[in-house]
Image (spheres, rainbow, N blue to C red):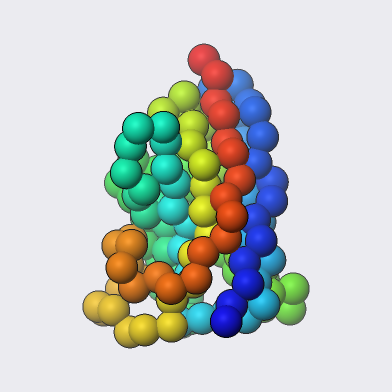
Length: 123
């Protein structure tokens, strides 16, 4: 079992920044951030593999950065130039299975999930 606890969500104006944190009881092969807006499906935002390779959703490339602190066992998502369409509940996820040649943004491989943290961006 891997426990994941997110923090750092909040309300900001468009153009602002937030940094999300996910305290993990252990790091796994792939770790990722997903988000789910009201009435929409959950989507992968950014993922990082144990070797440091990353994958980003096209709409957040250049604005969001995923990273890990091995000493603190914490996953981060730094979000800059936030837009109203980034408003969602953001979830941390961890997967132990090998899935493709790059860290994936698909839901299926991720076995462990945090409880989520709300991010609201106003225009």
